[in-house]
Image 1 (cartoon, rainbow, N blue to C red):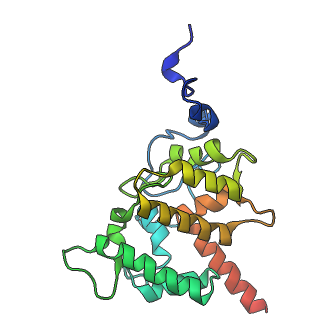
Image 2 (cartoon, one colour):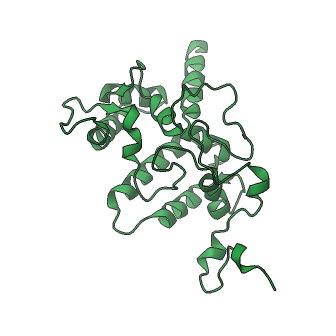
Length: 234
């Protein structure tokens, strides 16, 4: 008799067959269900991004730290704007994103009850800004969960095992949507669409490594360096 305790598919719940889990993950990533505080781990990067200093920040903090342009632990709207410009976004997208992001996240990161008149975001409290309707790759403390990250591709990467098409991203956003969570849906939609703009390849694919680089912020650094290098050559 088969061991049903390890079964991931329920015949009366067809969605469990449509959105599959990686049954080999245990052999690909050591302790894949242990959320990592300092590094973004997957089957191709068991130690996270090689050569990258985590500065004892959580993976979510590392993601946000790119926009802390003067590295003082606080992100102001003009720094968010500068970060978006460094990634190649135009004035309107950068300006509007800076206002919206700091407006939505600032208060949750304050140490006291008073809001910041300058809409500052404090990186030490960025875990408070985790929203719903997401992949849950970040846990509520800002750690990186390899099993949740892998599920992005096992569930939705139906065309390519290690990449997502634009349609698959849309399906993922729909699949992750929590009932009544309008704000979370909007934020997830905005985040993934911005990522798709800077990360898609010439075939319109968003690759596993590109997406992983967003979680720990390493992709942002790579894009900025690449653009700076291209600018010097021009």
